[in-house]
Image 1 (tube, helix red, strand yellow):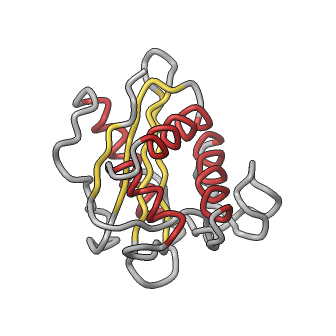
Image 2 (image 1 turned 135 degrees about the vertical axis):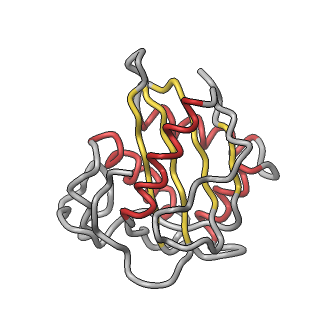
Length: 181
C-alpha cells in the first residue's frame, strides 16, 4: 500500500454538506447535514470519518461542496496516472476559487476506512509534516478555518481504491451540483 502522498495547497476546509439528500447518520456523516446524491458509498463513508474527526475535536461538521468533489475526483485520477507523484498542485479549475486549500490523496486502499486510518496514523506520527498539519487544521481551524469539503474516489483496475480529499475556505454556501469532473 502506498502511504498517503501529501499535497498542501494552503489551509484547510470542508466536509459534510448542505447539498441535497442526506439526513440519518449517512454512515457517520453527521445527522441533519445533507449529502450530494452523486457521492459513492465510499465517499459518504469518508465524509463521515473526516467529520467525526472534526467534531471529535469540538468543531462543527463541514458541508460537502460538489465543486471540490469534482476537483478531488480529478486529483484521485491524477494520483493514479502519475503513480502517486502529485508534485503539481491540485487542480482547482471547477469554479471554487483558490484561497487557502489543503488536501491529500492515497492509493491501494480497500475502503475509505482503511484510507482514513492510514492518514490519521501518519498524521499522529508526523505532526509537523503535511499530514499532521492537515489534521491540525481540520480539528483546530488554525491557521485557516475550513468551510467546505470535497472527497473523491476512483476504483483502480485492481479493484482497490484511490481517495482524495480537499478542505476549502472560499466563503459562501456549499454548491450542490454534479460530482462529475
